[in-house]
Length: 309
Image 1 (cartoon, rainbow, N blue to C red):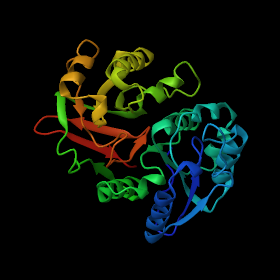
Image 2 (cartoon, rainbow, N blue to C red):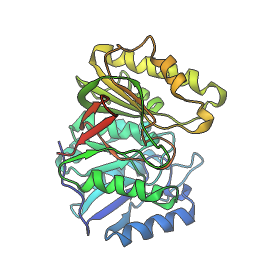
Image 3 (spheres, rainbow, N blue to C red):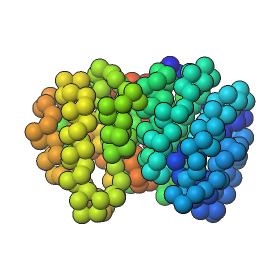
């Protein structure tokens, strides 16, 4: 299920279902607000978005109420998260998904929000978006790329062909092949929290888009490796048609050789695997649809085309 495209003049509601809006630096907050308003959007904030507790979050009841209120408000056309965090999975069983299904809107965020994006898609069939938080628009690193990718994905009607940023330079082909399928993915360790629950989307012909943040220090590669294996177990190798890895912080020590080792005995040789695509916990970043359709080809040069209809 697709909702209406974003248009200039639309109201965007900022919610904080993980960390509080109060955790966003004031400078980034004002810069992000100024940017979105300059683009012609009306930006509003959920009632409890600045509520904050010892965990830098807010109560489950407050976070759920803000989600329900945002989706019930017919003036709101898009719901965007303030920032990521660690605990959005606390609220998943308390959400009334019938409200979301009956009042579909664009929902966008990344990192910990990966769990919410997939839960909404699994429970309602609504395509959600892995991409910029509200706070993302307060950062300068190749900001024009992030901004264009965001609006292209949410406002265009047809399809989107991904192009590497100046930072990424190019996408690296780990294994050649071509495929079409449904996008599942985002933050790997967060997505794995949904395994065995009603909130894990089921699909055939999956193209995984995967990234992660370094919260494990020197153990990051080992942790990513076993999390990746766990996700393959959850879905089954035969349902995976392609894998697209994002970009990683330098401290993660993820490079082409490491990725080749990680996938070596886990994936068939005939499915495309790309590395270094512009999404993850680094800037700049693309926005892409969870549950959307994608085509991946690596013949003459890597090509990723996402359907937006």
